[in-house]
Length: 78
Image (tube, rainbow, N blue to C red; front, side, top):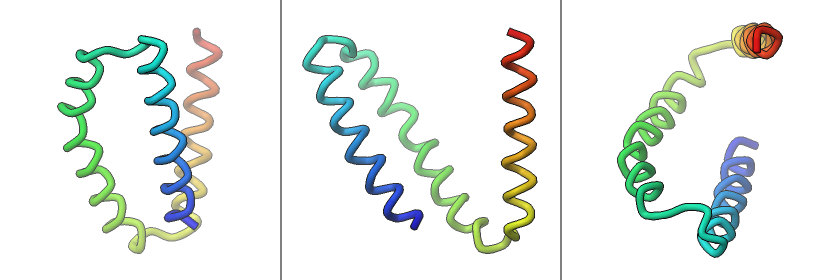
């Protein structure tokens, strides 16, 4: 399931990148920032892959609900 979602988002992001580039919505500075941040994204993926089997479904459910509560409170404050 996760591999399917990852593949889907890779293709959607590539199409968006092509469309944004064609309309001059992004430039070289955006590409440089992306290359600069790419190692952090890859490190996060590796760490997440290693930690995923260690946590239970209950943990992820509580984490997701906690994040949703934080986002809801943050949106009310804005």
